Image 1 (cartoon, one colour):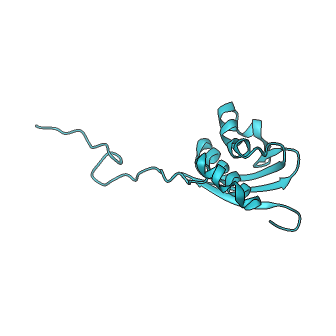
Image 2 (tube, helix red, strand yellow; image 1 turned 45 degrees about the vertical axis):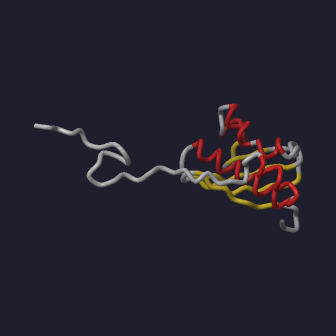
Length: 131
């Protein structure tokens, strides 16, 4: 936390990276210069993003500023969620048990498996021809 009360943290998911800044405020959320509703159009994405705040009962106490890059929109939602959870943990270390119980501090390790040589994809093979 710096002298102006900002809390910085980052989160990752697949190939997405989100740098999150929490400032004491009214609950405004801005992602890459856009509002939450404009950047994440689906309601389910917005709910997933705000999960750490809901679980810790901190809605409306912080303004959230996010710089998300890489990957797709769902990866960016997951990365932002992890970044918010880590920032809340820096704000108050006593929230660790609540966040851990909800599974919000675990980085999702799943990523796209690489294509293998001699195959069509990561698992799929070329069609076998007997003759």
